[in-house]
Length: 85
Image (tube, rainbow, N blue to C red; front, side, top):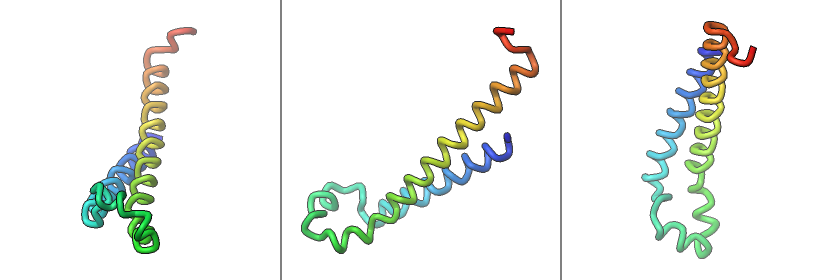
């Protein structure tokens, strides 16, 4: 479970980096992109790919962190005993 959690965290971090780099290249973080979005919706909708990639990266990163925290709790519960037992 530790390897899976670290793999998910790494994959999520890598996808976020790629999405941020492509988002900067496509100017997704500028106000001009979003202000003019309704006028050029057909053209702009094609450039929203990095946003979906970033969302997938964030989901993988959160999932990996949850698994990592669960592993950490299970590790210390097995090592020191459960505090409520």
